[in-house]
Image (cartoon, rainbow, N blue to C red; front, side, top):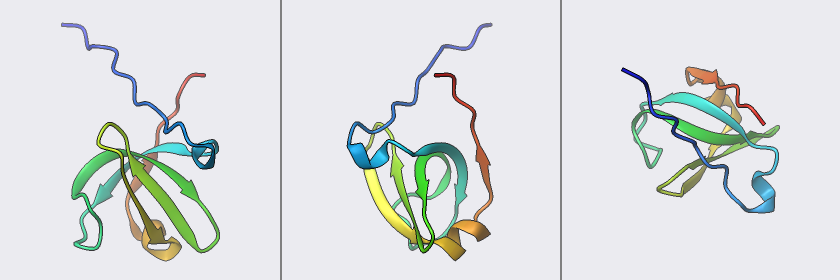
Length: 78
């Protein structure tokens, strides 16, 4: 059985140009989504801006919360 080639689109806005794709375990009531998800994130000094593709849910979290969240960076081919 072959796996389908699903693409996770990067947001088109210019602010997401430097975003990286992560698999994050988000289990906190402060976030708009819960569970393990593929998200695009721009990691800054104080905050991390996140967006969930397809549903286009965007939010911001503190950097220390991001550092405490189990994440795996996904490598994407350009």
